Image 1 (cartoon, each protein chain N blue to C red):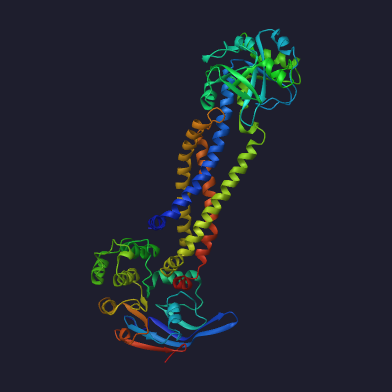
Image 2 (image 1 turned 90 degrees about the vertical axis):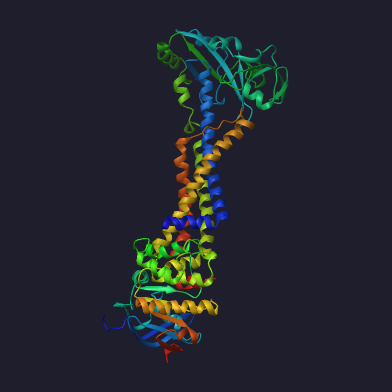
Length: 364
Length: 224
């Protein structure tokens, strides 16, 4: 009977119920889309790093996980590394951040091709000139770029010489020497990919390189890709925390307003229930159940909406943003919505429970 | 059956404080109502009849005096005890029907049983009462689809569904036309005659009061 009353109350004010559910769902979508974006983009970075085909990766001290930073490798280091036992190829790249989500990577195709056989071109081919650029199919599709087009990156024109299949290294690749000159890093690289002759030799090579390059970070590719988690990206965990906090506040305010007006509107009905012998706990119970239903419906809608945001991102920003669907976070986001909603319902609920029955029955 | 009154009130006083002013709503009321009696209380506005109704119904505590209902002492009852009193001992019929607008007539009646922790739906005998009230075919309608007279009959059904010791009716015909008023009053008298339901009815209408076995008049917080 309580559930029937709860359902009927929610049905009785459909617009308010719908607005509350939509507002809660936006909060849930906000959390899930943000977590999905960080998850999707980090996974994509890891996938592309694996796609390079190297066994060992070396980064300079002080470098961030993805972007360049800190010191650069001096000119001859890749050549020195290549002379180490069991090392077959050592290819250096230089990464330059264009904006928050986009990077340009400088590659020496000759050494890079020895790592993995090179980029698989869908259209066009490798660089012909120092000002050539190659992009992956997602970038080409999003920016409507074709082979032979001129595109502007880093405030200068580049000619697109080829479009390659995605999943390797980066979305935009330029000749290493050109990027080195443009960024005043002539002869320097920010990442070195190392190919080892045989997989069992990888730990030995890592140990040897770590000894020689004591201040540098030497990872097996497997270890490196496991670093692609939000906790290893500066401030990302805190940012997610802030968004979750905002989500709780939004949920709290939406449900507070909704339930507060519901209690005011239903003053007489609460008086009727009290006249029938309903206890304060019974009245609070009804409001909390209504709140829980709003939160559950909002959470389900919010989860469904994350599929919509993913489609939108794929449609309009596929090369810059990737949103993963994160089922592991569904109960967390729903719990956050429920917590905010229950907090929002507490004061109206207590107000309703404390209402004087005679005054409530006289309420017009 | 015991000869002890089902309602026994002695020297009942109720004083409200409105700001710094004390309002003496009841100034020493003495009243006995026998089991199975139909009593109407009449009086002008401000005579204290609504306050008496609220105290007898356990909606507000008395300030002083003695009041016993169905063997229970209402003086000094806690909020929880008065909530239980409303659940088990009294049933209310109000002037404005006071049905829950979101529920059907049937659910409005059954929620009273649910709150009182009694089995839902009510026993088959209650179906006869619904027939007597003439609402047995209107139970699946929500209040907005019912006439005033039908709503008041649903409210009466809700008030007696838990077989309360006392049915309290506050101006039960105040919002009804003459035809429906007469029908509702006849029903109350019928419930009193057939089921022995004790009824305490507040009204300012002498014609309505005439349906009762006895009429008590109030003025200035006292029975006159």
